[in-house]
Image (cartoon, rainbow, N blue to C red; front, side, top):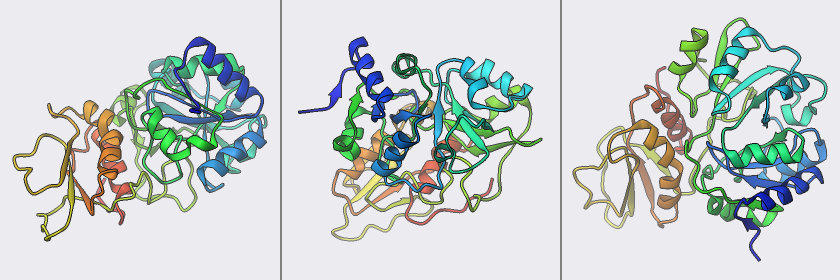
Amino acid sequence: MSNILPATSEDIKRAADIIREGGLVAFPTETVYGLGADALNPHAVARVFEVKNRPHFDPMIVHINSLACIEQLCLKVDERARRLMERFWPGPLTLVLPKSQVVPDIVTAGLPTVAVRMPSHPVALELIKEAGTPIAAPSANLFGHLSPTSAEHVREQVGSKVDLILDGGKCPVGVESTVISLTEKEALLLRPGGLSLEDTERVIGKVKIPKSNPKRPQSPGQLLRHYSPKTPLRLLTEEIVFENGKRIGFLAFTPPEETLSYEMVEVLSPRGDLREAAANLFSCLHRLDKAGLDIIYAEPVSEGGLGRAIMDRLCRASREYCQRGE
């Protein structure tokens, strides 16, 4: 019997009961599907780590449905944070702030900070409201693998290990949230995502981009290898050498002029729109990964706007992390 339900009001209430009882629910957000547990229940959060095979040094994001929750979870919320919340919440922005003692250490990987966001997806907001507790929720997939943007993606990776999957359709943003740390004088971009760097800088000024990844993750999405298909993936930085018998897939930004040499082609955006490309990124990669290919080549995109998030995912998904200038 399938554990996927269509996210009706009754199904959301059932899912909220599961969360309150310490169970796990996969649910849609505007970014990707999350694997949710009561953020204040360390035993429930431990199950998330177990199901995902996620290392305990990788902190989780806590999802809330109202600004009132911030005072409970965070020790300090400065003016920059308030301006960003007012402008971009609910939405694909996560803020890293000093945590209160209410937040279990397992959620934050022992760090003195907590990553918090308010999603905009109506199913996510209703689930948090009905559960009556903040929900810790990394992506609802196996750790390091392709992110899920549909309920079917969740079922394929962790479906048998979760109590319920709420099907809210395809995630409209399609890449994880942007993560900004506000624990120091300088705002710091920890992960590019569904909100562009340029948009955040219009509100709080300069946001610093780290030159390298930290030895210890300060937020999700900072490991060098992440978001990976099972099929080897390479960025298309030079001409492809077609070998006899090799089944080659191509992830194109816009429709390519020549497709005959490829076993399969997926196009991120027929009209060359970065927002559309981001929304289609993981669904295209999932289809390519199921096609029995020997290798996938991905066309780079411009790193302006959401292109930065797309390139971050493609670089980390490649078998060898590509070093690129910021």
